[in-house]
Length: 516
Image (cartoon, rainbow, N blue to C red; front, side, top):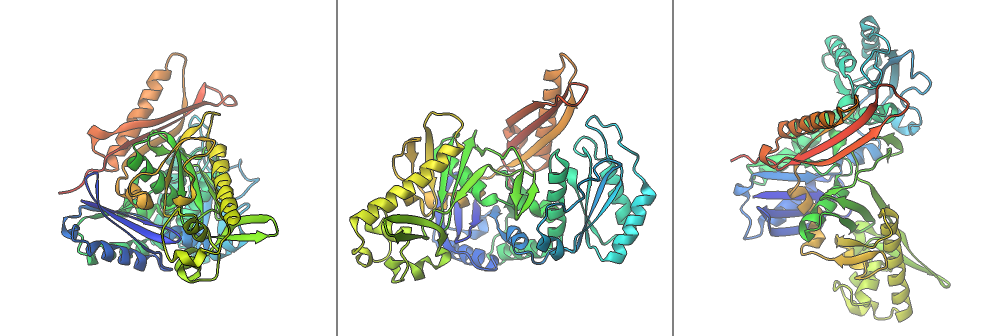
């Protein structure tokens, strides 16, 4: 038995599953503190006669706690960034292009030091240990409580980052340290940014995770707590304490994984319509296609693993307006106040839900309250919603051929049964809580992303080595070795570097081993 929970901007969804069978589901309002909404969801599940909390072996939660903290610039630790790369990389120092309010919120300061390697592991300059000790003393006087250390090409060789961390922690044992080779990918600036974000959230992580663990225990659940990551895999609480940034964007990922599970489609487009937005992504072999370039988080460029998702202002709470002959949907929404503001619930705001009820697409609230809406208004609103959904699916597909589309989420009644770029629209059972199901069925994974020198005739051997490393990392993360599969291999020759350099990225996933 397992429970999956997904915290969205409008609703907190939860499911109780026995193996691959969905036993019970619930949808409750998301609360400002997030945790009390999770408590309410667990309480609703507990009321179901089919649910036995004492039999639950694992709870998987996709949470917005840490994303909210960054976006709202609150409860961030005083953070310093140390970059190892001198005499190179000095032109664009850490915190370049960051929103000023975020730098201020984390009392951000930075240091440029010697160290780092070339793509093949050759040193740019030796690590200067005295230089790091001097930085550590300055950190102490400056009040930094968390440190992000990044060095050039650290995914190739992390020795300098690891040694610098040892020196900092020998001088400042209470300071938390985040290392970039454990957080991001090759690109220095984006990897450094992701590491700084992670460092700023480290101090908040124990408070939130202890609260979630206490919530699970208070519900009478003996099983372990996991958090879903932005790449569709799971991490345990200890991992989340060290890498809270990995929870970002887990919501869209959970929805797409749940859509794949419910529909049985491994390769398709997923349109997840919530209360405020519609998130559209592409599934490849059951997992979300990942963004291949930088990902912007709260105005900061990063390169950690994130799904390639486009969000548009189309949801069940989107406000519908008419100005002369022009009709618009959103991007603003009544959001969690739908049952207060929408016409069908006695409110005063025309929403897409009102139009859908009047058109007979969904049956909620009091239909007589929208009986006055004209047929022209209904037709134009539905046509606009169809055009919005179709346009974004069209932007995401990679060929001219129509692709299967899976519509999930509480507002998915806005996705038409037919539109030009969809070969077929699927509406699976339990579609409204696909995100929570995606959390419940999440697997664990391992990844290798490194630049390898590939000698002529040795490509197969090098790729095999990378695959084996990825498998080993998945098993180390808790995967059943018999279920681990390689789901993605990406090779990019790097022409501007010598030695037949090739960037090889391999991802492996497997089923989580549940305790007895």
